Length: 316
Image (cartoon, rainbow, N blue to C red; front, side, top):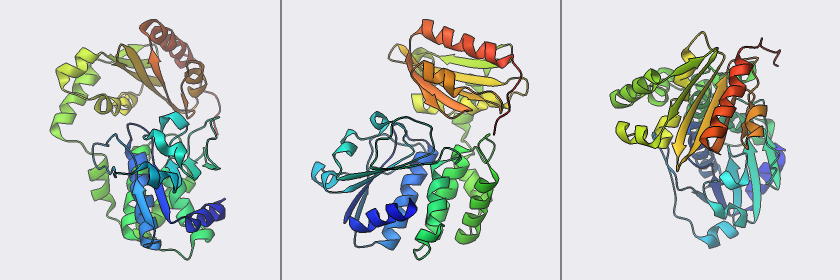
């Protein structure tokens, strides 16, 4: 499949890189890594990064005409569902390649490079760039930095349950190839400023625990009081996972009178199947749903309260 992707890249003079709405670190750094890699190896091509939403650390949103997209190869990163792409014009492209690590039934690309065992989209890109198919192309230190940042962002510096020996092997190769200063990159991606720290502290004080399930419900009025955006609030989901006594945790945020909810779990507690029942989806231990009313949210939480009390199941 990597060979097919490279053939399509060589075929097109124009390439548009897309990612999902409200991009997280993996989506944003993967887009920047792919842009840098393609620019280094195909300087004659026109390569642009599409998107409207921004990521709080670093962003790139190029101005792109419909004409450019129509005549370009679209490469969509870290986006499982077509309607979650951060530019609805992606479907106008001449040819679409989907590169993702989320389980999904929406195989919208002409090529679907979906590797659900990968810890991040950045891991898939790194594996592809390091593969035999791409061996004659340049993998610059800047591309390695972007890929490593994407990895540590999505794995919270290699703490999530989907980190594998392959993940660590790829990380090691990026460090060596790019001569990376790991401590500085972790500080850049993971560390927070004082204002964000205080906001996170406030969210932690709002945590409620039932059995082995922890959750926070943030209303729009709460966000306004804390001067916090929805995306800023969403990034605090992992703070709840630091509690030893819990097995599952969730952060629900009111958005236009409905609730968007992110859910995480420890190994052995499969949560994406429940999220799928409520119109969402995701990984086995990291999933989400959108637009739940309060009654549905309460029912949703009851399912996880019940699951949190059970013994963990064996998980590959």
